[in-house]
Length: 516
Image 1 (cartoon, one colour):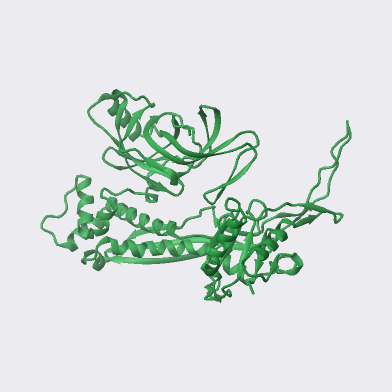
Image 2: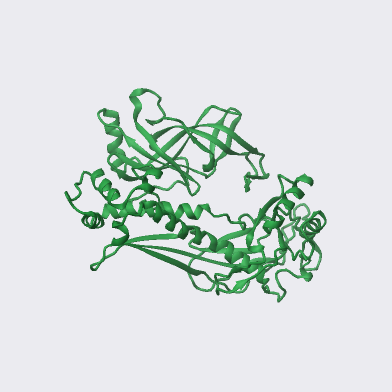
């Protein structure tokens, strides 16, 4: 394994304290890097980051003491990114120059230095599943997916290489506001102490001799303290959001929708064939056909809680509210699988008037989870064709990759994959929504029940998208709003909004069994 030090650039962020800036240190965007074996395309997985005990903040990767301008603290993973706080030193010309350029937003990017501990190389033009995710190398270059790496230093640089990095402006600060206390300490803290610490951290003075109510009101009158509350709220909600498992990942395609109006998605329902052209000939005009599935639209789902002054001055620690807020995030994360599985269980008719799963599509059966029944599913998906304009077969060569079963059949499914030697090719997932308790459809609040034995086999969405999930403007996490109460009230109003929708468009990459 290559353990040489590698560098790549990312983006500088918003000010979060005295001589402290928030920064996106690395994203999962592929970046060209030079290795011992040449130039390769590389992806750093955020979940694989390990942090050295002391991470210095340097200038241009120069590892001399004179080039050290501070340190990097509070490194965390956030939505597929590695983020951290750049704490600038004082008292040296280099540190002062760096701070002035960065704080005035002239210097806006950083570069990480890291050592690769584990990686998987994917040859050019090939695809691999790594940690349940699908990665594809371009046709002209190898892709290296780094699954474990150590962050050793961060440098200030003038030019970025990571085009996907986002500069954190003050308006984006709500996405991640690091606290000045450890999470465990924060959870046990009361709001009075939180407000006092926040006001002191900015050089302010909390009301002397004041009771809890006075301190709370003073804090809620300070916009910076309200922003700090939003940091606590966002961390708790997004933590709950990320804690939920979504068994639809990989076989459902996410699409961007611009508004809440009815939408149509075009797709080819007849294949195009390249035809043999003799020397000196011209490309023939071919026939093609495009269909639009039934119109569908986004729906907006919301929930809110109020933390009023009674809550803020009582003896409950902040951790109690973190648990409530985390459940808001978890509820938002459950929306997508609830929408998708209620759609699958309802087995809707597609544009041709035939249900999503039907004998006419050769994508349904009734066998229990086992080698024979799952084998029939592999045969059904792998044998799907798309007739051309003359009715001749065009082979899709679909490859099933996801087996989703009820909890009672999970171990059976795992053993089946192991016994068949498919550990690296078949991802087995347990889904409680397939149980006989059913689920509440987010669309109409009706309960849709499975039978506790049904299961689904699916090809990856990039091969044959059977179900589409739409997100407003492509945003795949909830909008979080924190508003200070006004008009004689004291407290904060926390709301979560998530705009999503789902529709079924094709059954060729899916196989459904009732298991009975």
